[in-house]
Length: 334
Image 1 (tube, helix red, strand yellow):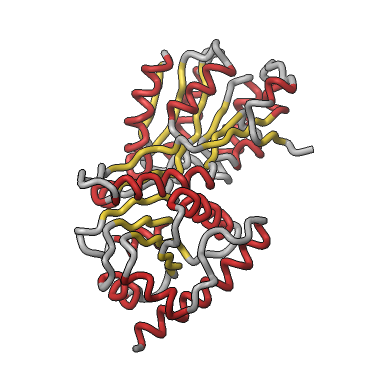
Image 2: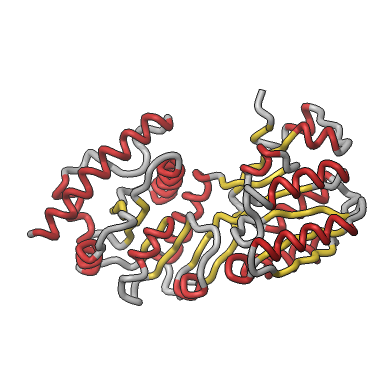
């Protein structure tokens, strides 16, 4: 009874919070079907083969996950059991309820969703998203569509914008980005670029790397910043890199769209609706097939592009309306 009351309480609270987010974000009616009564909402887990676990989180990230949920629902075309997962509470009641269901596949969003999914039986396949850098255990146990943009798309974009670029230089930590560098090496070969990736263990080592890079960089070099807290931070590394790239007319691109606002040339960032559709597609494919789930982490191809027009002009690019049409976000905003 206490477990059932807990699930009902979470369902009711989730509906209220989701509706608030949906109305503010302009997509009322997507995501959780709050028309279901609390008891019926909880009982859907007895009938459904698929559940969606997503983090109970504040803005602005709540709106991001709500848009992903909208994409999942759009692809599944059916009512799906969803559960908001608190980040700092005991999940035993949720685990017990999910274990009594007939789940075959779980879509887990964010770290909170992954934490709950990892507590389920091995017989439940996990399709995950909303994670930038997965751990080895997560990549081994689930199929993860990461938030890090696919290096092949980034390098292709660089080659299109700046055909004279020959070398791409990047600092990374093994802990956060070794998995991504494997994709980057293949992408560099396909685009004819020389990828020079340097492993660093902390921000002090990253600063030394950037200082050495700028001491010998030429017009054929480009610099790539990752979403890696041991290789890039906003207080020490980013200001240095932005200033030096500007002074030396070196192209700087990033996997973090926030860096474009600060002065990086371009970035790719998640198209959250399409990401949700891709997750829904993967879950449906697993439900409709007896083939084992392909586990591992892959970078994101459901992306949009951001461009800093001021930086582009500084680098000598002809920022015409036709040129800008290939980007969904132009900065600085006018």
